[in-house]
Amino acid sequence: MTDQLDLRDPAFVPDPYPALAAAREEAPVLWHEGLGVWVTTTHAAANDVLRDRRLGRILRPRSDGDDAWTTFDWLHADSILDSEPPKHTRLRRLVAGAFGRGHVTRLRPRVEQIAAGLLDDVERILDRDGRVDVIAAYAEPLPVLVICELLGTPTADWKVLRDWSQAIVRMYEVDPVPEAQRDAQRACDEFASYVEALAAERADVPGDDLLTSLVQERDGGDRLSPRELVATVVLLLNAGHEASVNGFGNGLASLLAEAEQLDTVLRGLDDAAAVDRLVEEMLRHDSPLHLFERTATTDVDLHGVTVEKGQKVAALLGAANRDPAVFADPDRFVADRDPNPHLAFGAGIHFCLGAPLARMELQTSTRALLGRLGPLEVVGAARRPTFVLRGYERLIVARSRPAT
Image (cartoon, rainbow, N blue to C red):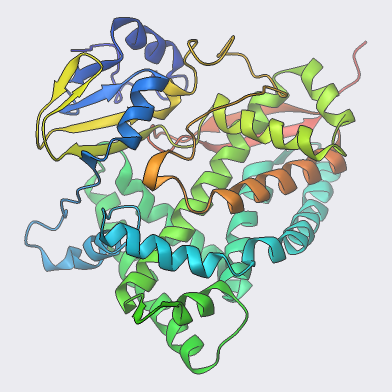
């Protein structure tokens, strides 16, 4: 049993890594009384949890008979993330088939254009005020605008799409408050209706976007059901938006804290491989997702403990990605770290299907920002008060002053 990880402690969220390291010293798998689940503290244990097919994503609806929660329930029950084989295999095959039509590749030039347009505003604010919140002005709008482009939705809708996503993902935190539950319920209802209407339009008037591909995708006589299609689109926005915003903000803050490495990165922005390595370290060093739960379908021996049938085990991805058994000097941000076998996108059959899109966004947006603005420094920041999805509410930067 561990008493190191008090996820409700206000001091834990800003910097959970010392507590995670202390828990790792106890054992690779520990019982967490507050959560009522087993938790992993090492890379090996987390990797095994993510890959062991006896540990599944078993959805327990939050509705408890309350019909008002049915939309939230089926959006998750019919998604790839919360399905297990054979349903998961079928859904992933269909969605991967739609993604495989070159949508991510065709988007790269458009992502560069979106980033450049947002950076015009960022630079104006920076010139006027001497500082800018890169979360609000750049990191938040960019991935939603990219999703709009990917799905063929009106770009004017990006703010409401962002608001729906942020409301829904608050339910993934430990003990969401009643207000958060009500907001998530409303967001699910509105988001589902929005996607259903768009899908109906694409069925009548196809486009060259991913939503059209999802509507049309078939494998023999099989295709996505209406609910599965809506759940896929909702998951794409929620997961894609949160991973990109938090991955960018966390990673940029980590990089800017390393002045010497920042200079090296700025000199190597034309080296695509160097930018790739930088992005992987941004994802590892301060991961956007910290906890991923699985449920035992039978008794499972896991690194010295027995996870009994029906018990949950949570892979602590932030702990895994700072395991000194895998990463040398794990608490230090190393821009050219290679190899970098982080678990930020998961592993096994639930490895993030949108990882190529997220990586492309982060590579493009990071290169564009640093190439345009040059050396920056953090002059103000505020963390989100959340652990599962870790990120910044605000990250205020200014141009670095020359050393005197």
